[in-house]
Length: 74
Image 1 (cartoon, rainbow, N blue to C red):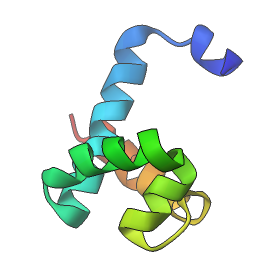
Image 2: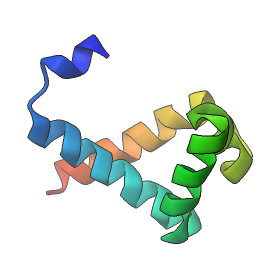
Image 3: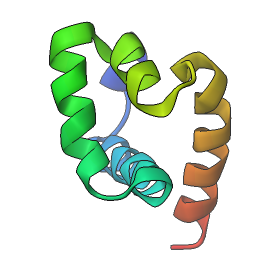
């Protein structure tokens, strides 16, 4: 949480949008609302696992690499 205090809002917003692009590519646009709903009920970790069938901690390195590549291609 403290890390984000030193990051320009533009970069954190841009990174978040790239991560959403990756999730939409995996499951389609409805996944964003589904993830939000599951997160409010189960919390992010369990909500993510219920939708994707895998733990966020195992997927975020892959999703992060893809998001970085998307940012580099801008």
